[in-house]
Every structure is written in C-alpha cells, then in structure tokens.
Image (cartoon, rainbow, N blue to C red; front, side, top):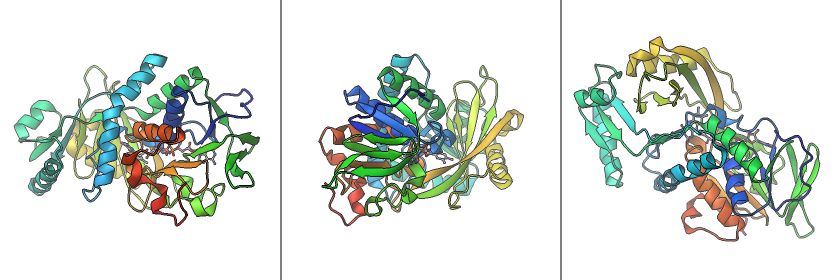
Length: 382
Ligand SMILES: Cc1cc2nc3c(=O)[nH]c(=O)nc-3n(C[C@H](O)[C@H](O)[C@H](O)COP(=O)(O)OP(=O)(O)OC[C@H]3O[C@@H](n4cnc5c(N)ncnc54)[C@H](O)[C@@H]3O)c2cc1C
C-alpha cells in the first residue's frame, strides 16, 4: 500500500482495489487519465484472492445467457495482450497460460450430459472436441481410468489472480497511480447533483468521475445513493490449494467434472474449486466445503491424494439477478459502476477496463449495452 499522502485531486477515483478496480485504473492511467484508487483493506483481498483464475467463457455458463457469453468471449480475446502488457512493463509473471481445458465425464450419465453441452457449445459457434477415454488419458494421463469420455476446449486459459494483482500494483505505481489505504464512506456532489469526489475515513478527495468497483458489498454500500445502488448479492465460494512438484505437474490443463474443477498454476500448485453457497456475508471455510472439493477432485484426478495441502479460502462472488455484470453510467453524473461480475470477474477484467476507459472518454460502446446499470433502475442513465 502506498503510504504517501494521496493526491488531493485526480480525474478519476476508483473505489475498490480488487482485480476489477485495478484493471480499470491500469487502463485509465494508460490512456493518460490521472487516477487514485481507494482500498479499505489490502488490494486483491476480496473475491479476487479466492478465485481459481479460469479464463473459460463457456465453463460455468448457462446458455440462456448469450449477452454474458459475448462479453466473456470478448474479454478472453483481450487477455493475452492485457497480461502481456502488464508483464512487459513490470517484469512480473501473472501466471497467464494458454492451457486449454478438459471437461471429463466420470460415468455414462455424465457423458450424455457432456455431449449435450458440447452440441450446445457448437451451436453457438464455439470450438470443442469430443474425446474417448483413451484419447483423453493420452492428453491427461492422471485423470481417473474409469472416465467415460471428455470434451476438449483448446481456447481456454488460466491466470493466477494473486500474481496478476501484484503485477498490476507494480504497474500502477509506474504509471503514477496511488492506491490509498482508506474506506470510502460517502459520495460528494455539487449543487447540481454532479459528482465532485468522495468522502473517506481519512478525509475528502476530489474527482469529477468516480468508478465504483466494491465487489460483493455493492448492494449494501451505504456510500452509494440508494437510487443507484446495484442489486448485487454475495454468493460464497470456497477453494482449496494443493502443491505438487513443478517438474512433474499432476495436470497440464484445466480439468473439470460435473462437480469440481482443477486449475493448474505454473509452479506445480493446483486450485480446486468451487462451492457455491447463498450464505450472506459469511466467509468461513467449512469442513463440509473442503471435504466436498477434495472428494470430487480425487474422483477426477486420483493423484491429488499425494499432493501437499496448502490451504483453503472462502470469498464472495458479486452476484446479480441476471448473472450479467453491472458496468456503466448511472443517473448521477460522474458516477460509473463496475461491479456484479459474479463467477467471471477474473475473465471479465480486461473487457471491463476497456469499457470504463471508453465511458470516461465520453464514448458509449454498443457492445456494453446489456451490462448497463439502467436495466435495474428507473432513473435515466446519463
Ligand atoms: C470461489 C471463487 C472462485 C472463482 N473463480 C473464478 C474463476 O476461475 N474465473 C473468474 O473469471 N472468476 C472467478 N471468480 C469470480 C471473481 O473472483 C470475482 O467476480 C472477481 O474477483 C470480482 O472482482 P472485484 O474486484 O469486483 O471484487 P473484489 O475482488 O471482492 O474486490 C472489491 C474490493 O473493494 C474493496 N472495497 C469495498 N468497499 C470499499 C469501500 N467503501 N472503500 C474502499 N474499498 C472498498 C474491498 O475491500 C475489495 O478489496 C471466483 C470467485 C470465487 C468466490
């Protein structure tokens, strides 16, 4: 955290230093806008810290969500360039790897379901390939010998969200962006109702534009006026981290079954995810959650039994009523929302940053329409 006195005035204030806030600040600063970020805890300590980092647009998608699919695909296309730029600027590895993903059916019922999903994917023009048990185990020798078949999605990739946060912190410092350790407690407006800054736990700061990226607390954020507060709810998720030898990784690509996924890290670790629980703001790691993830991961990839248990964490996905993020201008001039990224916030970071930079520059990208805050508010979106 930058301990220097924050600049009193910037063009844009970003509230929240999760991956969404940091990526927005990075893009804005890169386009010559002066930015200050406010974080009440540690950067990246929210949902970002818990995420597996799968960049899998189809992964957990319900196919009733074509607008979400379009945003996911746009963001996946941006990812390599986004992480590449951060890595070149800082010399730090973000853990981005174009690994592909193998979705495994562990019995014949699951195979039937997986084949149906594959057909659906293809009908949306998405590339995926059916593999029989032998071909699947040729690719990933560690998967359960009793598998019934698998679907290979070669385009999927993975990133290490914690490493990406560290790289972005370094990159933002290079671009002159301060991350101030303070809680935003109020939105300050002029007599015409336009944004002129924020009130915080350490005083007031001026900016004509405020980007709200507070993650899962957005729906109860008292500093956001009620008429523009987005309908975001916390959806708890737990993940488990295991460590194996980097020279002999247990898997090369993302592995998934009906009940669990396994995301590899470049250093031999894997992340097992994830539970999905409607438990309010509860972030306790539970025996039941860890047990479920380990049991299902073992069914999929028995070698996990030999791995070192590193830890388990829980976090809160910022869920929305229609599973789409909430990105755009509000009825308050100068206030922009960037929240509600639910299960896909790591994947959606580059496209969100692209959108926020365009909005701050005065544009209104057509492709962003489905994510507009206006779909939940009666107020006119300016
Ligand atoms: C178990 C699990 C697994 C996941 N796996 C994946 C995955 O594989 N791929 C994927 O794409 N997505 C995944 N996600 C979803 C992804 O993690 C989230 O969508 C994303 O991290 C949201 O980022 P964010 O920056 O909006 O929120 P957060 O990371 O929660 O950050 C919000 C930040 O705002 C700060 N803040 C809030 N209010 C204030 C205030 N008033 N003042 C100052 N600071 C404030 C908070 O302290 C926090 O640091 C997963 C999520 C979970 C829980």
